[in-house]
Image (cartoon, rainbow, N blue to C red):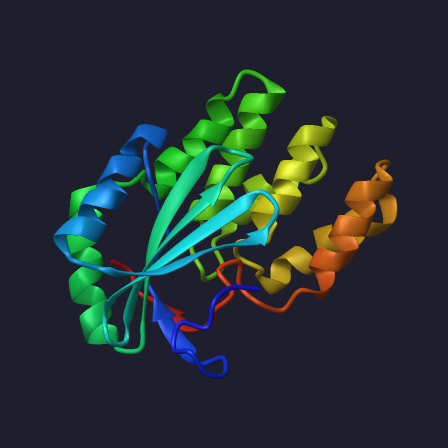
Length: 210
């Protein structure tokens, strides 16, 4: 799933963290970055029906992506590079410009949600902005959502888990695949259990902490 940004076989890259925009209106910042840095469009694709991925080349070996999950009406931006030093420099610049939601804010939105639809959107957004490396706080919130009494929240938890397929998700995914009362969610959980690639479709060496 996802674009091979170097045009050949799948290669290893380093990624910045996924920076979730504060609101749909913040999309204008994405376009401003594209324009001011004179990025070259690489087009767009849908790695899943509800996900739109747009990609640009910033420089040779450095790429910018915007990933929109329509289930939460949320967009995250991420840098993909083959050089950690260049990645760190540009990731810092973009984070200061975008001013994305912090990890604490993403998790707080789940806790403060008053309705099941609001919680579902918050869970998907948290998955979108979750670290690439395992984080117990995100895992606890997302895996709890996978067993919520509300189907929409369970579907959101399943979707959120796909953005950072940590080995820790295998147990709740297996349980969901076997025991969820909804046949469609059981089937989707079984497929997710077999997944072995990141939600952005790029093999990863590590995550830049910028």
